[in-house]
Length: 403
Image 1: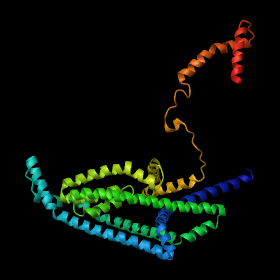
Image 2 (image 1 turned 45 degrees about the horizontal axis):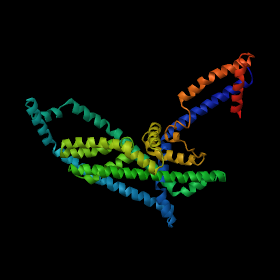
Image 3 (image 1 turned 180 degrees about the vertical axis):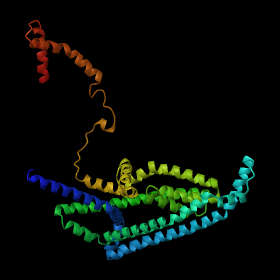
Image 4 (image 1 turned 90 degrees about the vertical axis):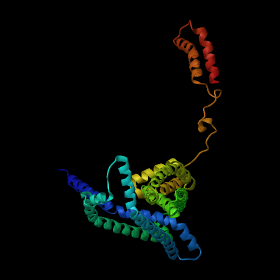
């Protein structure tokens, strides 16, 4: 056995063990890394407001606290108003359920010539195995729901804490990052940071515009249908559909449908149809145009980045994909050398005119006419005396072409 073989085997096993340990550690902290990424983009979003308040003499920590306090107050007020509205509508729906059931029973009796009674249906539901199994499963799932709620609150606290530190200690963080880089790299890092702040702000601005448009459109529909709490429902649809990726549209449309059902069951169907149609209009017309203007990326790139972000990080990737791609595109654009484009009709997708370049038939005819001259020159090259008179004009033509 060569002397180096045991050492090589030990080294290979050590590298495999280190790779496995690193992979295990990375998978264990993946959730924390995603929370830090969300906190970083949240800090970039509030950076303009914090910097503006700090420029007026306020400490950055106090400015960051005030910004977060304002966001918390607005969110808590909106959730409280929405919760009270939802609770009132649920109570109203439960109180009116016997009337809905009576109307349904009367319709079924008149349509199918049956003799159903509400008392029989209620007793059948109360003593059914389905209801008993549903109650058991719900009781068993209370613990899981409580665990998920506590996990969500802990994650929210982690994101808030990291974003607070990123925003409050932004200058210190940038100084610490630049201290380990040469001066040329420091300028690039600061420029990338500034671009990220601008693009994230532009993305939130575009989302705010789309939330405003969605809220107004749904408010007009709900007001026309005389659905109660139309302004609050419009705000709910606008915010949830734009700032909760992937499932935000379905969550946003479910509540207006529920409230509309308490007024008239057909109104719920109309709300569903309007939500679907408006979502298609927003996805294919409104969102690409607003995103391309505020974030300065092509609509196809924005759509593809959302799909790629969803595939990589799920809902979080869908939310931060567009500002991340816009930042990367703007940063790399400074290092791509660009040239002036020549004035050619083909750039605009037009064909060149017939006089500027010979067509396919013209070139084929020219090649066909040159075949005898080419054959003569070949024969002359072999020394055939019969072709000598025709060789001189061909040579003359070649000389003139060369001149």
